[in-house]
Amino acid sequence: AEGLLGNGVGAPSVGVIPTLLDTARREMPADTPKHQVARYFYVRGLLRVAMNDRPGAMVDLNTAIDILPLADSPAFELAIRLHREANDQRAIDALLQRVRRRKG
Image (tube, rainbow, N blue to C red; front, side, top):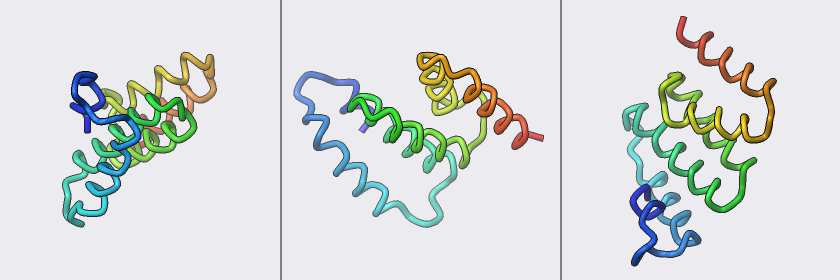
């Protein structure tokens, strides 16, 4: 899905990608490593950003961060960027607190 989002030439429409992601999630084994599950939610969040669904993107990014609460994760970095674009310092502070609290 990441390649499809980044490749405009010969790629299916953005509308097809959610179906592919739903299939990937449905077929994901229960013992899938946490970093891969978090990556799934990050990619789905990217898709939602591309579809101008920022609230949905934030839900997915927050899910990725809950699964893998690392300040250097792409989900965390994108969530911070979206909050900055919205000038939402309170949300940035809350996100930083969540990651700090989970680390230690």
